[in-house]
Image 1: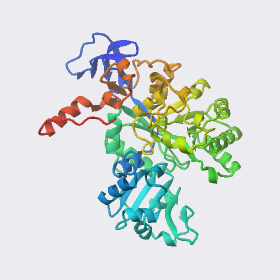
Image 2: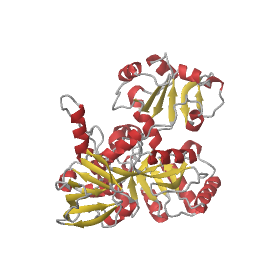
Image 3: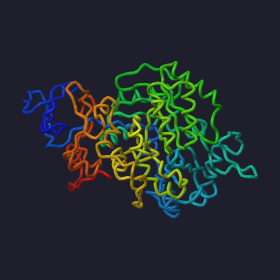
Image 4: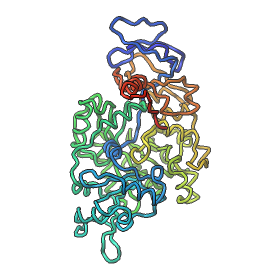
Length: 487
């Protein structure tokens, strides 16, 4: 393919794709008879985006579930109506994204008051907790279970609140078969995403096989780096690579320190870096202390590092550990943080500029489905730092649009941006993993939005074209109406 008149970092050029790579960049390139052409109309041509922290199967499940988050159901009445309208799948209703601002702390009795006739399970937006009604508890025979994650009241009755027990629950849920990843692949393509890092800690060889099958069928066209368990061993491909060993830390139940150090050493000996889930200052310091003792290795990272006081900045920089952050949580959850997080920690929430100033390698992820799966929204939040109510949280942590974009670029491309204050160049020989915007960068940087994405390629294959999609919709619609891309 020949892409004509695309705006690159250094000006407007034609870009030739041959096979899986950029073969030529120049002005006035002539298309061959066998070469398809696309007029970029001076739109910005960017590297394909990399979501550095996502959960693919959970996102697939959410796309097929009832949205119980504050943006969809703001209060008890709205949640009640949504549950009563919901149609069960295989006899169950599955909800996701719940937060206490909707209807307070949920338990079996609260959900029974909303929907009691069929089993209901609702996941907290943190992913750490499930809420079940009485029908669901009976269906899973939880009253007779001794699983440690089950909460019971003072009388010993199961409350319907289940903590950090996904593996145990997965064996008991009604079987729905492997999730359909095709909707995820289509969504990511429309957002300009050509690569992801799946950070699910329970990933193993079964998940590897599922991802590889989805890629081979074309259902998931993105490159995938898969984190997960340490006992996973699988030959990588150009599209699927084994990534860091994911370690979940939970402040109320931290593992013995020596045990954690031994786990880090085993991962490093197997050629795997480690990635720590850290959302509190205690969890982050515990992880860094273990890395200091066991020895940090290239590729080690902290996921979230939600609260980062100054001493944590220094410790991370000293060890050379990378940070993977989610700037859109300031937008999505900032008002809750202002109400619930200690005042001393609020200036340290989801830092951005401070990490860069400290010389720390900083990447961005959406944490979808526990955050909105839109890197453009995350970029916009990194620039604005505004909560939903419009309060600026951490103004000194704001990034320029170029720095925000760099959070979501592949490592090999991001490193070309130097101080991250300029767009990285595309070069001949680069993989043809590309994202074309429908406007130039000067317009795009004013409002970073997925609506600007006009086309996406991976390895030269066109994954998404807004023009073709709109033509298809017009042909399918009797009145020629178009459906806009959501913000």
